[in-house]
View 1: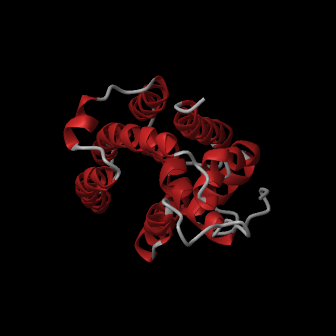
View 2: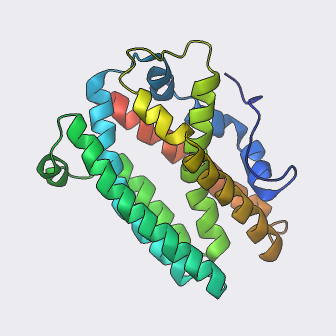
Length: 232
């Protein structure tokens, strides 16, 4: 599946879609990585998914810290409230993620005993660094490929002719990110990115923002590869 896949998030010509288009090759490599194709077709080796699950929970710890940083950098009271709500939702998601891990034979003790993979460290600390060094727009652009990307990945899987539904061990994961609730979250992130682009000089800063977005997409692809490397 190529980069001709229609981006459903953000306004035409808005910052979210322009960033996606400017990093098309990296975005496609992330959103249709062999790991993702394996999820769609039900062929991903189970140890690869278990490795991903554990590291994703460790990733979420740092992602929550980035959300807290976004609240600190919020440019208005309304934005601060939005970020506080987003952080609370993420903390709740982390507890649900542990329950999902249990369904894969991974206890909370198993997850907590795991150390962060180099790919997890590289990605999460880079996001925090971008947030510390820049303003709210820099941080939101660094975070966007995760939030928006998972929504698009689910839609790509749903549209994939080779998708396996019956007997696919990853169907619940696909349904989670393809659900109306998550799709609304991804869409909302793109709308906010578009608005920040207008209010924070996104046009004048586009080259730098595009570099940030592209790097985040590359690091996301590396995170998928980390899961595959568990069985190589």
